[in-house]
Length: 281
Image (tube, rainbow, N blue to C red):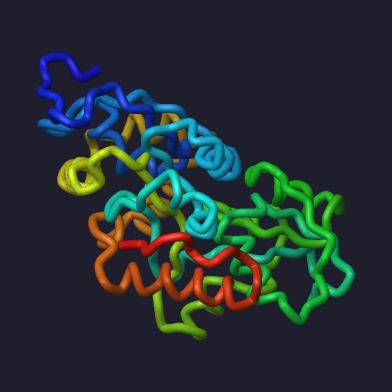
């Protein structure tokens, strides 16, 4: 990987890149991971679930890492936010699923991680619901656990939006719809961070070029995406990419920054996260 390619002078490779195996990440980072972005540093890729990625970032293990926006207040001392490669959007929020319950009073809820954006939105939404009993599960195990009665409800993300009816589950609330109704802003889900001391603008440009390459030639990344898609069907993979890779993946822009700032300021006001240790930009 990266043979015959010039490396940006102040970014000696290889840099460690940790992302999820989900189609939005493998689609967006295919070109960078395979040395197809001229002038970009070589990267060595590790795949992990989002809760694991948040922990890796807290430990400072990677040069570039995908994390939940909800985790930023704990991470910005050692990392800087890149303006490309993340996941924000509309109509793509987490869902609270049940096997028929109409409320969560006294419910036992499975969640994908305590520092995920999904859980932060859930806590903002459920402030008056009296939910205190939650357990962290790998996100692919949440729907089977709710279906089988091990949990009363599950907080799900990613492709679960498309597959939950096959488990006999119903959506109690779409937290993306709730958020958009509250703020009229897109929902900030996943961010790309770079270790402080690296050239953030240069890395943002490299990631942006990788996303642009994916848009320009979707077929180029198809085998790579499917190889890591955790047994998703091709139609679910395509729907996943279309939902989570969009104009905000190319550049956060003013609206994207406003969405992140709104989420984290509301959460800080509710004492759910610390106040950001430094500005986002």
